[in-house]
Length: 227
Ligand SMILES: C[S@@+](CC[C@H](N)C(=O)[O-])C[C@H]1O[C@@H](n2cnc3c(N)ncnc32)[C@H](O)[C@@H]1O
Image 1 (cartoon, protein in one colour):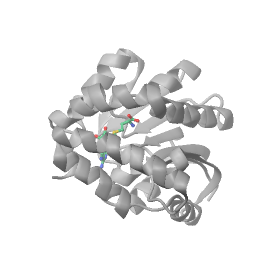
Image 2 (cartoon, rainbow, N blue to C red):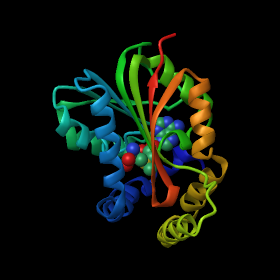
Image 3 (tube, rainbow, N blue to C red):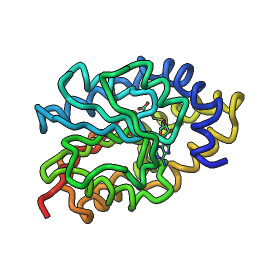
Image 4 (cartoon, rainbow, N blue to C red):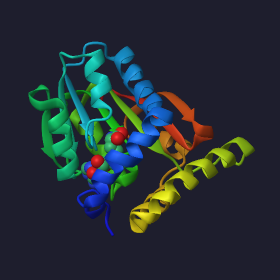
């Protein structure tokens, strides 16, 4: 089952209404808020903000509290999740149904780009990185949150990984393929160090990396260099 089908089927709403509602207050909202704060510090008065893989707007809702004047563009392949985003933000945001390899946006037009649980889902992460570079203005910020492949063999990481996987595995009862996809996508993805290298080689300066749950999840903040 492809990621596009997963997030356009009944699992999308289950993700938002069940997984997200349980996990957000416990952990994930803290990570999203860290992402938003870091972007706000670097670009305090961003005008155009793109949330790629926005889903229902779980990052955008925190961002608009910090900077209500910004134009927030929610971009996702999921029709049901974009509908939920529309219900949440109404006319206070824009919505684009688009794949994260091809943003239908002008080059150098974005001040802040959020990618929360996004790049890992790309069929071609390198293409997503080059699209991010293309649409961001020089000096603009790319704020990324994701589950990365673990390279840390410490007990702390192993214990956190076990907690994370056990929580996710429970959801296999609802959609086994979606949860298998999640675990596979993490295994195929970069370690956070490899990802930092990719960003540095692709025209970004990585300014901050924060580990959560022993490195199971990380936020990566990068600034698009001048050409
Ligand atoms: C786990 S959800 C995260 C949603 C939101 N960013 C959050 O923090 O809750 C992953 C999102 O990525 C979207 N997605 C997956 N693959 C995508 C792709 N190739 N292009 C655009 N969106 C994609 C899904 O539809 C889904 O909304």
